Image (cartoon, rainbow, N blue to C red):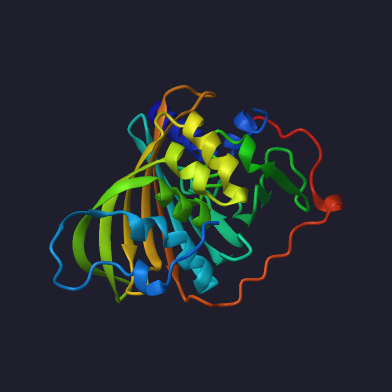
Length: 286
């Protein structure tokens, strides 16, 4: 019983480290070259260190693509415990807005701890519904992403897809790992390390301050990544590995975030909440 309670506590700590990190820290576009210039390495090219230019332009290529369906996965680990948070929705890269439904993990006993959280992503802001912790069911919580110590790369339980793409602007070099497939689509695989301090100055206005905050807030400003680009230079899959210090419960939390994009050009309407629908009270501590 004691062991089960201990594991349940660890899982809850991990869940609130992401979905509830806002409680701890809320107080606290580049011109594009033609698509042909952003195409990844051709079939048969050798693996090895390559220029990161195609990665720097990945966000601009997504803007030209317009929109996409999104699937996300965020795995966190601390103290020998791992939990995974999954999300699904749509994103408009031109408007920098999206809508995700985020599923939080169950407790070890199998009972669902949280209802799915609806998240609206917008330039400089994150809106969450079903946030819990004292927030009325019909209200939204609004967070200024520039105030988050992770720049909303972790807080919502899903990395903002456009912010993740702009993070690649901080890649100095990358290693071409060869050709493979993502969901049946041929892609080129690149691996490298992006520096948040380099990415922030060239990011779009909505992400610039958020990435600067992340550069200061994470345990390190260097973010290892694996990215898979299709033959038009569009991101099909992006994996980032973050590390942050969870100040509320102490200790370092390792986060592996995966973003998958597909069905480019789909409708991605996002209606932001009216002022009257935004919770103005104090969010209870988890």
